[in-house]
Amino acid sequence: MDDQHKIIFELINNLSEEENVYAQSETLTSALTEMTEYFWEHLKNEESHLKKYHYPDIDEHIAEHTKFKITIMSLNLAHMKHGNSVLNELIDFLKSWWSNHILTFDMRYHLYFLNKG
Image (cartoon, rainbow, N blue to C red):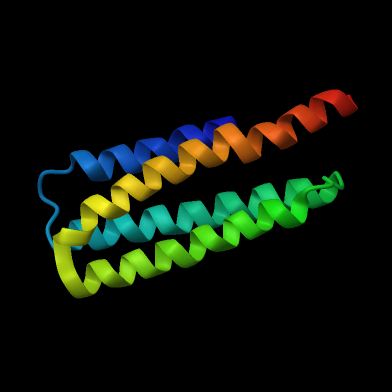
């Protein structure tokens, strides 16, 4: 999972550093699609892992994933409608959410699995 987390931050940083990103650009559309697909795949893998090992707080963890998915879809739609004015909000949300999620929710299951042996 740690390697996937590194890739997630690389994707976000690449988007925030891209100079040719503007509303409705092919570059932005491609980047958002790639990121969203990767996020979904990562979250699916994580949930599968938690189910496999009967993680006790799985419902709360999946609820966080669901909130994230809803927010991302909303921000992607807002970006399509309002253009680059939403892009910074989207990037800020992604950085904040992933940092918080990894350091809070993912660390909980990591500690759980460490204690379980």
